[in-house]
Amino acid sequence: MSNYFKANGANRPAIVLAAVMLAFAAAVAWFAYGTGSRSGYVLAVGLAIVAFLIPQAIMVADQWERAVVLRLGKLSAIRGPGLFAIVPFIDEVASWLDQRIQTTEINAEKALSKDTVPVNIDAVIFWQIHDPERAALEITNYRQAITQVAQTSLREMVGSSLLSTLLSERKQGDQLLREEIGRKTSEWGVAVLSVEIRDIGVPPGLQDAMSRQAQAERERLARVLLGQAEQEIAQKFVEAADIYARSPAALQLRAMNIIYETTKERGATILIPTAMVDAMNPGGAMGVVAAARPLPA
Image (cartoon, one colour):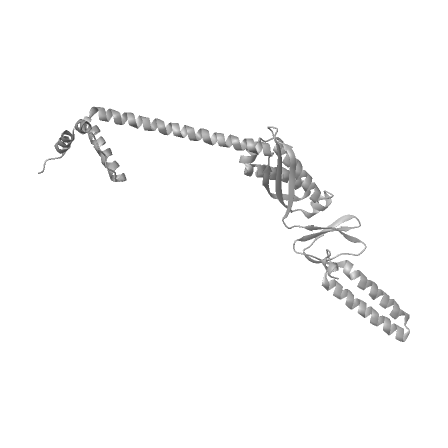
């Protein structure tokens, strides 16, 4: 019984009404048996037939369902959602269509890209029926057709794109697939909401080559940056040498500052030869510093 209620169109009100009608037919038959009335038997048979036809005539479509009703082979109406009635043996529900958003997985195995690289691409299509009449009458199996159209479109996109483009511009590929598949399925009353590429697989050998290429590119950029840094440092040294050449006192002060910073940071004692101290001329350097200071007011 639970499987019956899960069938399309089956509903408890129709079953209950049929059971009541069948019980009434049984009561009429019992009364006819007691009185010997032929008309009572005829009425009981008629009520039993009506009870049998009630589940065939009264149907219920869920909120997301649409029923395509044919009358003697021609389209009569699109019914649902809710309770509706048909004429038994004259009307027929040809198909039940689900208008919820649905998904279809597609895969392009061993498709060659524009630069002749074999790739495997997995994608998911989100689609929805927006015209039940066309989906029921224009195509035999719209689900299978969507899968085939999606696979064909995916292979066409892979064949017209470079591998680097597929890897770096995945969002653009999603948009192109959605437009291409949607253009073909719109004639069947099916709208493609979005297409998402889940994975792009390349051969292991090519992955290793791409990894080595990326590593070499990073090393090249690192060497370029290091060379630029060396060039900037050399330029600063040249500018500092020009300044020191024009001002020997500045060079002497810089030498003494280097010695001071070395002993300050490392806490070491530095022994400097007397000749080197005389070359620094600390007295002259201090005199220059003192002369450079402003006189007190």
